[in-house]
Amino acid sequence: MKIATGPMGYEVGSREITIEITNLTNDYCLFNPKVYLESGETFNPPQPTVRPLKTGVYTFPKTSAEVTGSVGVMTYDLFERSRNDYIETLAVMFSVPWDYNLYKNWFAVGIYPKEKECDQTLYKEMYYQNNPQGFVREEANRSDFNLEGKSLDKRATMCPLGGAIIKLEVWDKLLSPLRTNKPVCHFTKSK
Figure 1 (cartoon, rainbow, N blue to C red):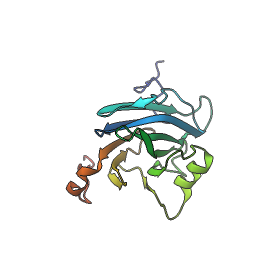
Figure 2: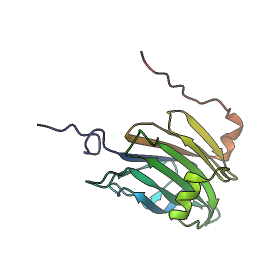
Figure 3: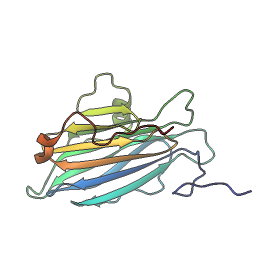
């Protein structure tokens, strides 16, 4: 009997998260990645640097032979090349649970002061905090959200499946006036 596998070679229906970060800036590098996993493991780790106009793709599957999902947070320092200095820290929280009877996929994107620790405290803040400050948290439902920062803007979306994907774009601030509160893409269920 052959078992169907997904794009990363895991069984279809297993729990994993793939995070795709696209750096659409001209002057910023995403540098010094850190990962904290509440559950799960690293299959495809974050690349050390995501330069302007490049994309990084990372995968965190559930831990083998355990009834857990893939849950955690990752950060990148935002390095401004013209200043030759770190300005802020970008954080991405993800939760792809094992049991969809009790939980749903959630994700959050935030901007913090530089050198923010990537640890259980950050994960819990981004997952549980009732009044988010400095980040946006959403249930994964295929719609997107915007997060405007001092220097950069972020757009993100996540699908609600067991083999979930987060797509995150980091933009220069100059595009902000073009944005509206309406999603760029509209998803509808097919009949």
